[in-house]
Amino acid sequence: MDRGGKPEEEFTLKAAAFLALLVAAQFTMAVMPRGHSPYLSALSDLSAQAALATPACNEKTCAKEPGRGPRCLKASGVNCVVKNGCFSSAC
Image 1 (cartoon, rainbow, N blue to C red):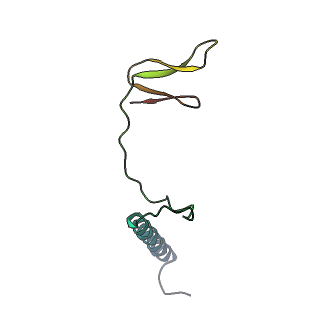
Image 2: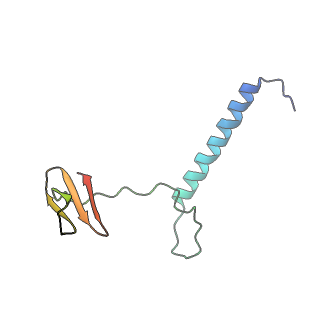
Image 3: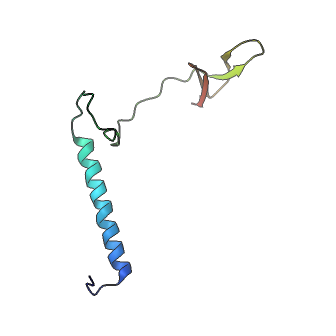
């Protein structure tokens, strides 16, 4: 089906229309109220979530000493959490 346009222009228009559809669907899903149901779709969490503040920095980093499990030792600018292993992240 030739509409007289260049193939590159048609592709660009189709791609722009598809992206607009995706953005509209994302926006629609983000503003819909969420129910507490076990029947939610696996894709129901694709919309943007609210940003949550991180907990205060505890100024510690992960370390494993011989004969001991993982633990947090003093270090600046690092947050340490020991839960099913040891995890460090920058503050």
